[in-house]
Length: 459
Image (tube, rainbow, N blue to C red):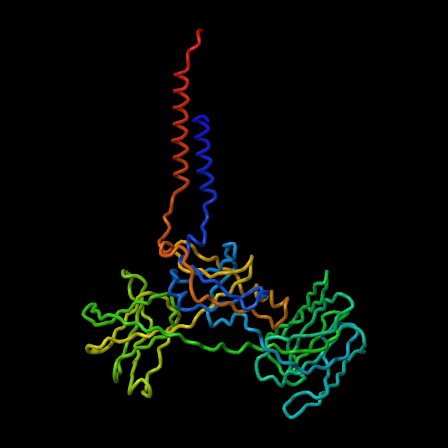
């Protein structure tokens, strides 16, 4: 093989190396936890982070917490606060409903004169409707829904109907009233769908409401076939998520800065701290101010206080002050407590409270899945998880929710501490350009020497 061919081969190999350079989970993450799925066909899952994940994470925003499939490919995932009830199935309550006579001519909009027989609590027992124009038995259905017995805000109406003989697409308007006389619009335009193709069915019977009313009436927007209603339910807001606080106890060191005494602590992981409490031995009542920062050379940022943390009596039956709430979750590594009065030789214990967050992810690719954490090189691409979950819920019904996934008890080591070292940035373009220039010069020199060494032909 000629020297020119060797040079071309080496150049091609260098180009291929640059083009195919890609990060792998085994190289860019410190460790991973295999995930056990509670169901195999859920399509979407949620996993609660535990203390081991927070201890292994490196990035302040947990962007180095990522879910991979069996092929080592990242799947769509996002870290959500426990205050966001990811995939909680909405509660439903069945409502009484009554058919109203159809109106010829307009598809809705004229006033309806209602004569209703109500109980003492306001719920309707019987309803009669009168309309100024001539009524017709045909056309889209018109209904009156009694929501007077609901004591919570209704987010939407969920309609059920008989399977239609033909594809269904009907537009409706929802109006609300508290006295069956004055009506206001709660949804100006919505579409009910019932389509079927190739054995698959798409049904849309959810009507969102913008406001509350004791009575609701559903009016068609235009003439045409409508659904044969069988049931109406109210979609209520999910119950408030139960707050489960986890607490970390930090033992610090006494420091004096600018002649003022303080105590400094180090948080071992990227915990989302939202509460703070201080413990001193014996009976105590001290006013504290709490600060935090990320690096040694950064300035301290106020987080809470001044507030009085007290303790009277023993730990079992004594009285204690309530933990102090922070304005927002904080993941800083360094924390500092400053008392307003000297506390003697005692060193306080700083207790920091947090709520475990949730990682929601879609089942993309083949299982098994694993959650990886700890990287100074890789970052998770944020994915719009909530719109995708709502799309899946629209297909599978309002009671659908992502299934639970569980972290394995033991983590599997990947790159270890090497993944926490920042990646060295190489200017591949400059190196490649210099390689081309040097190689080109060497090629020209080789050609010149070859010409000089070749025997000269007689003229």
